[in-house]
Length: 212
Image (cartoon, helix red, strand yellow):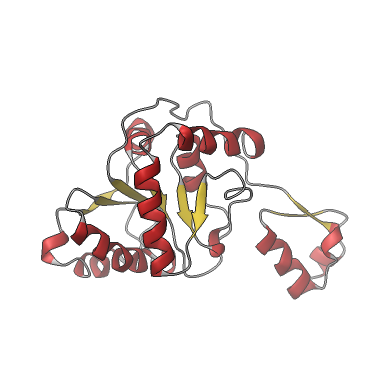
């Protein structure tokens, strides 16, 4: 506590994190500066490709990551549109078996567990998908994977446990706290990916605020 309260400079990734400094350490909001999580984008794909009807999650398969909620929220959409797919990418951190058991037999060809995917293979997935989805159960602040997706022109659906500064301001994504909001966001981005505007919005927020 003393380390935080006596610091000359204090930085937070998001507004939520800044509020935590105020709440838990009694710091003045004016003395806490927002410093968005930077990423290197030289290696990120900027190729504009045809978007598939695909949602993507990238992260550890852990109960805190909210993947179970994403599966449950996606099922009605998958049942309505058999071309829609949900790719779950990441190493198992104890939850994969349980998550697989939540996928009904009819959806096993639409909800796909790909394990760890890296480098050019992951860039190709970002470059051809419709949206990146993330809904952690507890505060995690900004997701590096979500920023990399944005750098590839992929819009992000997240919640306020994983804020991305300027996301909605640039129309590069939305916050979805409920099933209804999630459904509306998916439908929105499936429709918007027929144009190149969304690609420009996603690239712009990275260029203006996160590119290191």
